[in-house]
Each structure stands twice: as structure tokens, then as C-alpha cells.
Image 1: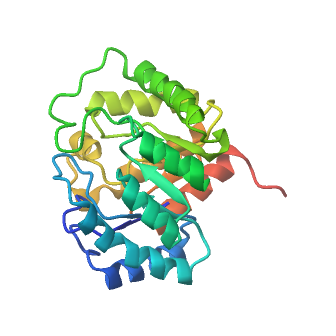
Image 2: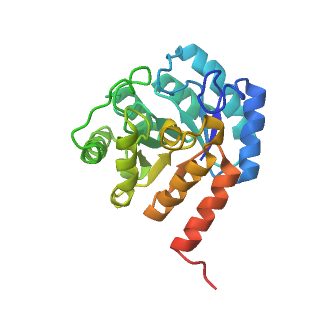
Image 3: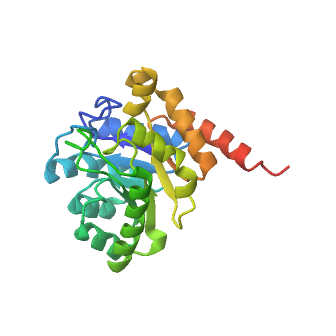
Length: 262
């Protein structure tokens, strides 16, 4: 899953693709590099990020989704917490909702997903982006995230969302400190035994910098290490800024895990 941030304040790319034309060109380049899904977002969810209005988020993402939908055949994902933005994105050509706010009880979002049949990524987050990293606390982060997945599966089913529509994401860096992130990464083999696919987003995240001292622009090796271990654990979708490098790492990890036929 290649990341297309249409924002001026994303932590990893500093707003390099903040206007529609550059975002579209970037999306096409990620497809050329081997992306299987494009994830388009118009509101930064970095720690401390301020929310943007619904109108502004729509202004940022809809032209990009419409243009990419005309030019590529692979699935497009809308990265949003707002049901109205998700609805407009699905109408514009997206087929997957990547909901970093799935920890909130957004019945409207779930009804939309049920009614449209769109794919739905339910990500765990403690708190909200503006406050989530102030002091995250868990008794047992692995158990609590696992309980969240089970509870959300039941609540989504109650709203009419089919099991086949759901993907789970442990939410690395979303209301977790370094120790929590490492515990969740170690627990991936257990999470991938759940009945739905797992998505993992670790690309250039701050815990890599905390462990290695690397600034954002130099965190690709750590991101690839996590992606490779995740694939070995059975994770099926890797969300990344660095598509070409990650595709190569994933292909090698898959070949080692399941040798290609002679």
C-alpha cells in the first residue's frame, strides 16, 4: 500500500505532495514502483496534528482520487476519520476506507461501509492524534488490542459489515510508546492467526528514530526490517512511503517464507 499524502504537514514527506497535481504524479509513480493499493489522505494523523475541516479535506483528496481512478486499475483507499469524506471518496472511485478512528464508535462510518460494500481497515488508536502520544498507558497492550479487534468485529457485524470487508491494523505509533510498539510487533504472529488480514504501517515512524537515532529521512532500513519480519509473521498489507524498496524486501521475505515453485 503506497502512501499519497495530500497534506502540508505530514511527518514523513513534509507536504511535498500537498497539491493535487503533485499528488497525482506521485501516486502514478508509486504504481510504477509496484504498489498494489494507493492510500490517499488529506488530514495528517501524526502525533500532535490538528484536525482539518471536512470541506478542506474534501478539497484536498477528491480531485486526486478522481484523477487516479481514471488512470489506474488498482484499488484506491481513502485515509480518513470522517464519514462524509469517506462517502465522497467512494463515489469518486475509492473502494477501501482506511479508518484510523475505528477506535471511536462511528456508527455512521460503519453504516456507510455496510451499505457500499467497501473494504474497511479498522485501526487501533488510543486517544486522538492531537493527544495520543502524551502518555499512553496499557495494562497489557497485546491483549487490549486483540480485545479491540474482537469487539470491533462483533460491532461491525451488528451494523451489517461482512467479515470479508474487514482488515485489521494494530496502529503502531497511535497511542503507543516504543515499548508498546515493540510488544505489538513481536505479537504479530498471533494477530495474523485472526480470521481477517492484517495491515501494518511502520514506515519512517518515530519509534525507529527513538531506537536508532535516525532522523525521518534516514529510517528506511528500520522500516524494511519491520516490513520483512511482518511478512514472515503473515501480515498481508504493508503501508509504506518507500514502495520500490519495500516491494523488493517483501518479495524476498515471501520467497524465504514460501519458496517459489521450481
